Image 1 (cartoon, one colour):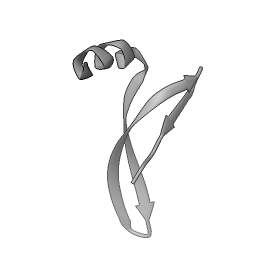
Image 2: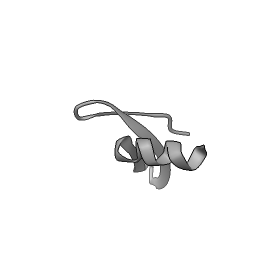
Image 3: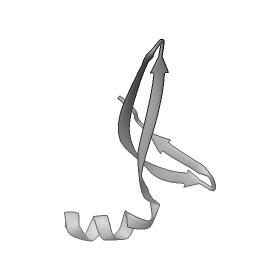
Image 4: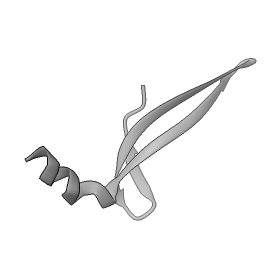
Length: 46
């Protein structure tokens, strides 16, 4: 079941890599997201 669902949503699932600058420190993070409209990806970052 999980395998089948992944195949169905594969084209609308994206990995997101981001960088954040806080003072002199640069950190990186990652998340995943889903396309909810053209050019809009809904994501939850930590």
